[in-house]
Image 1 (tube, rainbow, N blue to C red):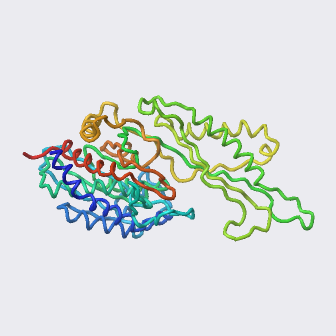
Image 2 (tube, helix red, strand yellow):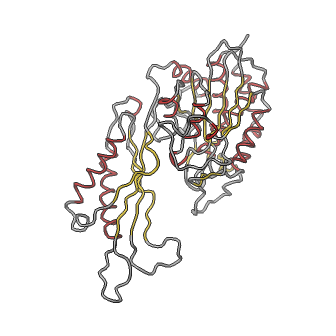
Image 3 (cartoon, rainbow, N blue to C red):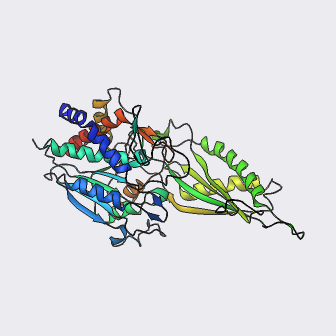
Length: 426
């Protein structure tokens, strides 16, 4: 079976790269609270429709109970933002497998690319494109693995499902929740987030905060007393830099994160003054900073918030500026909890065995160093979810890419996983 799978992938290398190119050539940016996923979702629907799948396309808000669910995140617009689900039925005698991933990307932004972000350029063993690593490439690998199963006439015992969801970036995950509430469950879900081929039974979580310092704006033409919030923000940045080092040294109680060298905390945005104007003409009225802080699965939202705020307040009381200008600390989006599957889950042996067929030295099994929507499976459904996706780099940055040879191997491993997990009718 493996030889047939490997031969098919080798013979369809250009088709695989072509699917990646097709997906990244269709812009699908998440423009919070809106998004542009409709066209790429229609493409996915047509592709999977040709593989003998039962198809479903629906808006998240079409699903009863979504907006009243405890995990629903409000202030999102789902007009023209459909989910797509495809089911390839087996004979009912095997385990089911679901591949789940998002089709929205972060905005391209203003930073320059050296290649066209929507062209799927292949160069020096890499393929480039906005969202190709996070995470259109991973879903393309799953789609091509299912096409392989269809074209090799492999009859499965268990069902295979592929779902492409909208609005995962910026803590969305309502699209993933909608699929759970619509009844799509399986014995295992693989989320092809960019894990660099590591098999990840757990992943980190995180929170985003906006820190706002207010001042007294203007120019002192008439002797006004001005208060510049940028000075307070600068002191905060120094404290947050200290927090980065403090936070990064934390260690998890989970064995899957035993080798993690650093727990991230980022400053992601700083704004002051009339940012929409080409020139500034006054002391600004306020200065804001957006920070992102990750956490291990055992950390609660309350613990993360308390640790961050207490670290800041203890040092601010000793600062001659900050003790007079208290900021507001606002939680942005939702808290993304870190979650995982049991340490002894049967999928770990299956996936490790599959990986060893392609990589004799094996692939690492460890925690994923990022937050994503997998918690919607592990906390709000009967489907355990594991993260396993492409190798590449520059996620959320210019020149995002995947490693091509490893990507072909990922298609092989996904196809082998379908065969081994779902079972084959002899």
